[in-house]
Length: 96
Image (cartoon, rainbow, N blue to C red; front, side):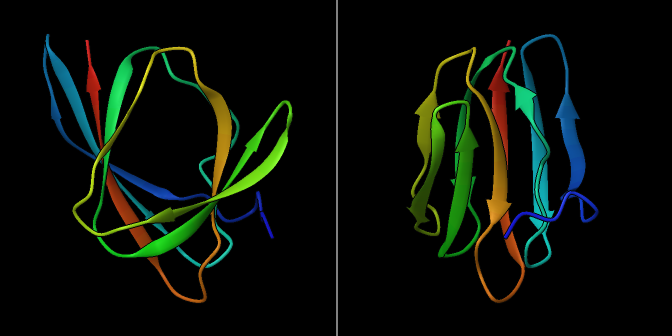
């Protein structure tokens, strides 16, 4: 389902000495590409949906609920793929 030819669109809204706030918008099948998080972060889904998480240990799916945030620690390595029929989007807040 991942299509590396379709990257998610990232728009940085805020970047300063304390945080980076980025909006990610995914076409169906689009992905972030493999990356490692250099900061603790919070993700706030902008809509209900499903994402596929590809990690070194395999693939899993996460059900996302609009407005329900989740936190992850620095060091997470993965690719995030839109597993929905339509566009998907979330806000990521990195804590420096």
